[in-house]
Each structure stands twice: as C-alpha cells, then as structure tokens.
Amino acid sequence: MAGGNWKGWRARCAAAAFGLLAAAAASAQQQQGAELVIGQVAPLSGVLASTGEQMVLGGRLYFDWINEQGGVHGARIRVKVVDDGYKVDETVRLTRELLAKPETVALFGFAGTANIAKLLADGVLERGGAALVAPYTGGEPLRNPFNPWIFHVRAGYGDETEHMVQQVTTLGLKRIGVMYQDDAFGKAGLAGVNAALDKRGLKLAAAAGYERNTDKVEEAVRAIKASDAQAVIMIAVNKPAAAFIKRYREAGGGAQLFNISVVDPAELVKGAGLSNARGLGISQVVPYPYRPDLPAVREYQQLLKKYAPGQEPNYTSFEEFLGAKVLVEALRRAGPAPSRARVVKALESMGNHDLGGVFVNFSPANRIGSRYVEVTVIGSSGKLLK
Image (cartoon, rainbow, N blue to C red; front, top):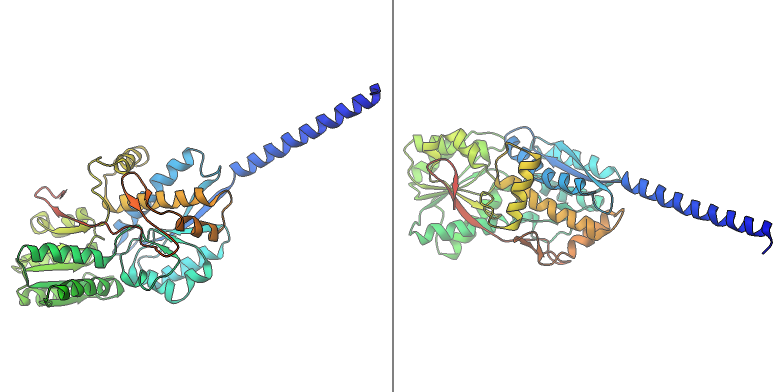
C-alpha cells in the first residue's frame, strides 16, 4: 500500500473509531439522563392523610435505593406524586392528567375502593393502557369481574373478613355487628362479612354506616350498642374508626372490636386513647414488619433507617415497599425504555415471584398477587402484637 493510501486508511479507521466512541458516549449519556416516570395519586390531605404519607414513604424507600444503584437499565425512576384528598372526582381528574403525559409508564399505590372503581367505570385505566400496581384497597369490585389493569399485591376484603369471622366464631361468638363506611369500600367489606356469616348459617346482629370523609359515627354507636353484639367488625379508616372505638367504649360497649387492614394502629391509639383501643384486632395482609424475620422485612428496615431516619416500621409503608419491589422487577423485565404495554406484559410474567420471603403470583389470567391474611392485636403498650 502506498504511503498516502496507508495514511488515508489509518485516518479513516481513526475517524470511524472516534465516531463509534462518540456514539457510545452519547448513548450512555442519554441513557444516564433517562427517566422512568411513575404516577402516584395518594390521599395526602383529608381523613386518610397519615395513611397516604406512609404509602408514599414505603414506595420511596425502594425507588430511592434503586436509583442509588444506578436505576433500571441505567434509567432513574421518578415518581410523580399528587394529592387527591381521598376524593373520588380528584382521583379521576389527576389520573387523567398523569396518563395524558406519554412519559408515564405505570401507576402506583392509589387508595380507595370507590376512587379506583370510578377509574374503571369511566374507562380511564383502559384508555390509558397503564398498569396500576399495589393499590391500597382490597375491594372485591376491583378484582371481580377480572380487569387487566390493576395488579393487587394484597389480599381482598373478602379474604380479610372471612379470616376475622372465622376467628370470632371459633371463640364461640355468634352475634356480630358491622360498622362500615357508607361507600364502595365499606359495602365491599360488609358484603364480605355477610358472605362469611352465610357460610356458617349466621346473620348480622347489626349493620351501621357512617358518611365517607367524616367521623360522624354517633348513629353507628347507638345502633351497634343497642344490638348487644358480641363482636364488631369495622370497615373504616383511621379517624372514624378511632371516633367509633372511643365513643362506643365510653357508652359502655363491651364487644370485641376488629378493624380491616387499612388503619394505622398508632393513629387509632392517638384518636381513641390507649385504654379504649387496647385489645382491638386488626387484620393484616402483609407479614409483620416489626421483626426482621424475613429477608424483605430486613431490607425494608435497613432502607427505612437509611432514607427515613426516625420513622418507625409500619404495615402501610411496608405494603407499598413490597409493591415498589414488584413494579421495579416489572420495569427490569420490560427492558430499556419500556412502553406501558410492555410493563403490563412484564407484570403478567411474574408467577410465584419471591420478594424476599414474601411471594406474589401474577399471570395473564390472574391479577391477585397474594391472599395472605393474619390478625394482630393492639397490646397494653399500644404496639401491635401477633
């Protein structure tokens, strides 16, 4: 090869190599700056505000850790959190806004049976085509009939109420009352209690509702007290549940009290007083988060100390922590720059997936990842006991 040709060939090779390196660097830089946007509508004000804060915290712990490790396929997770105040119309409006943004690849951790049922009824999730992962509700209308958009990490209210009725009747108690929120959430729990009683040839001693987004429980207290119920199952959120416990006990009500899982025991003790709340049974849909017996609990407690020092373990934040683990695994399986549809397909592939001693099982025909239920009790110190 002549000297000039040799020099030209070397120059062309160098230019090509430089071009490849520049392209690789640009690609790496682009990937490093990429984001995976997750939309979260949560009740950060109103009667469910403390629950909403714990929901957001639980997801944030895991998302922050994943970002610190370099993200998913080099892309950081950014969670867009907006407050609906537990109001159905706000949930719908805010969800539409999130889904109108093409960068939103999935939804995460909403709250409220009625809120999410409205999203289904209005076709918001169907038109958006995005998965909603780990909603903080066990409402049966969100599970049956089957819909492809919601991936549940928790057991349903039917599972919880069956477990509580079984425990109550095993103790020989047959007069069971229900205090419930008068909306889709409360009615879902009420239907679960009725179904569990029907299986055992029993009827409700009393059913008393209260108005959503209030703590107006005086009529419910009177009705339950007059029924002489031996046990009362509450389908209620923090403030009205605490108000009922306090006023029922002060009125001389002596029934064994239970509440469905969507309450914070610390809030109940604070609102009702320890002497009134002591002995309350609360059904739970994830394992006990206060002892590091499982790898997932150990991981949760470590990240809680790292990213939220001073915060105590909590069932709500642990549940959404597990939900975040589910979503991150789906994002991994969906590959780089995933579409909404690819995230849905990735979630469907998570059959018997181990989150660290806690398992979820999804498939193209199944969106109920877990049916785990156990009952805990508020002890004499105000802490939950197994």
